[in-house]
Image (tube, rainbow, N blue to C red; front, side, top):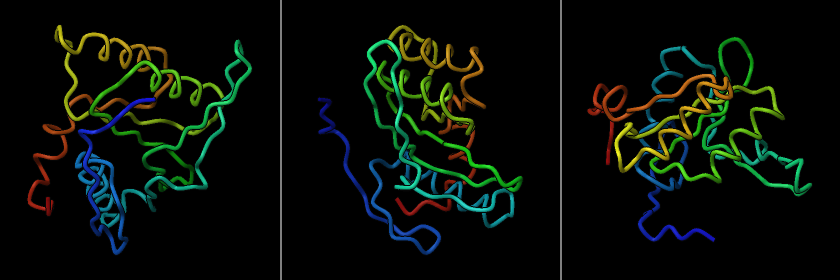
Length: 158
């Protein structure tokens, strides 16, 4: 079982909802989704919505994995997307996202704080690239710190 001793949960209010986040990355992305909602670019969002808990079947082992997306987003077109924020991208998360895209129709958006094709991050980068190239995910945001969060930094409380 993975240990996440470096992860410090934070409880903050976003859009009138009191939420306990697993990381600042999730909080910042939540603020971004709330901004999109207020601008009318999406209808709504939910953080770790229990109704979105998915059961994934691995065909070769015939066992069931459970996957709870970080965010469930209702688009203006009326369909749901799963948005997954990642600071670290281990192989088991790759497997869950691939199975999700194969077994469910909802599109997946993968958000990395900062993932580059460098020596120290190459394995993680290659996993994410396989998901993107294999059309398993709708979109990959490789550097959310630069592409999203720097632009709306004034909105963060933390």
